[in-house]
Length: 272
Image (cartoon, rainbow, N blue to C red; front, side, top):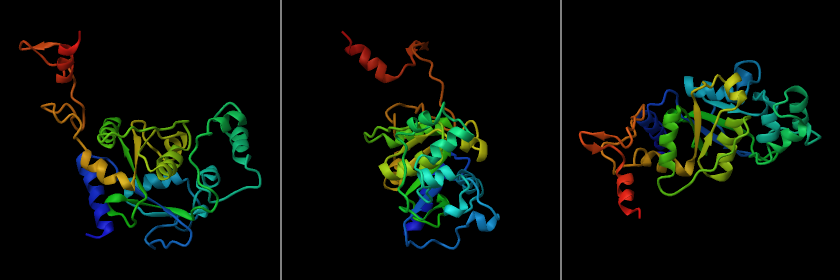
């Protein structure tokens, strides 16, 4: 099995096991000099204009399109300048000043900057662009994968990612979420990330109000896929149903027996 076929199979595995409503997105950060498949579309050539990066993620996961995003393809300039390092200005403060003057996402420029002290960013020139492709039909070997999903599916992904002892640390400030946390932070930390889609994701990319994002670095794809539904495997029947979690009755007697989890019962006996 070649590399691409392996990733495509994993993509289909996530779709089938989690009953995903949209395709997982394979993401590759293109280093200087790397070749990119001609099957990846440049938005500015196809549509005659640049577009928000997050909108191409929506097209990819809903329609199965492949995109190669370079600086001329991305309309969201805070992303190309501050996060992706594809463009630059003379003053490093320009992005914060623009946010304050034209948007006011935070109270003032100082708060704009403070809220982004822990932002994941790339240096100027570190990459030439980003390729996105539906994982189940990927044209790239991904650096990471973004899965847009319902919160209950997010719970399963978190359980799978932490089954072997990991603990996930994520960052939230409400803005640029899919780009800076879904892509850049996952890439730089090589750790899974829980991402709450930001204002741009919701407004410009039509991310729905019931959708969250789980990002997985390439090195952990097999681990997460193979660990799905292993959490709580000593509980029979499994309480972790798809698409919905089963209601837990708690410490109520049913036919004379408690329906509470066995863990509770075991610990009750050890309390002194």
